[in-house]
Image (cartoon, rainbow, N blue to C red; front, top):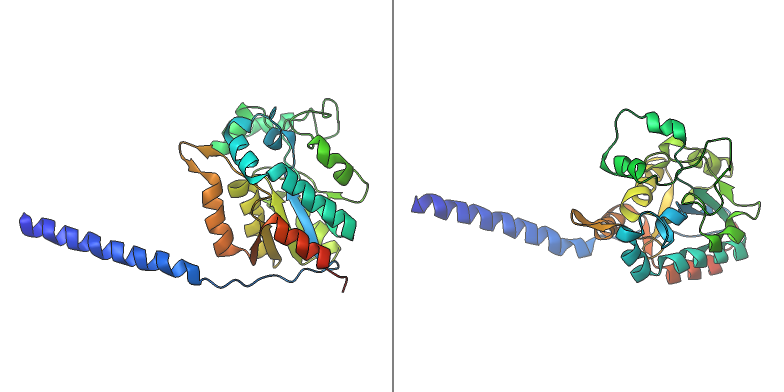
Length: 252
């Protein structure tokens, strides 16, 4: 028995050494970077909506602390403001649920939760009845940027990623191949957009403090997202860095 326990301890020690070695090497990951220009780069914001970003939103109890810590609301506005000032194209990928979506026969955990708490609900696909000021509506401070007649508002994504909406088509039709990505929420819609757009051949820079995520007993969604942003994205920027890069960007 003693020899067995000794062997188990040795095995566990070996696993810990491998893990420690892997962790220590993470700092050696390359930083590819992304060159930003006004011709081929767009700002994409996911879910800049009340249910995520307003204290009255249905998710504020789990995302509000992280939104506040990151200064997310203000940082998203900073990105919108500088993009508009420089003439950079802006795309919004929103999240809406219509009454017909209640007919889904199966859902993942967060899908079920979103339906249960009536998140992003609208009266219907062809009506704006009850939309103004609802959880599905834009945060009021963003409306001058989003509703200027120039921002592209895509069809809604239904789960997390843009596979089911027209974001990729809208980007391709404008010959955009680079995206500055921000919005809500970090480990769900932002990360899903990051993954799909990369698979579609786009370069992506994620703005890490212009997003936030839920902090729940099951885990810290924001911490999980930061790890994956670093592993996956072409670049991970702060809002200050992204603003400076857009300010310096030129048409090509």
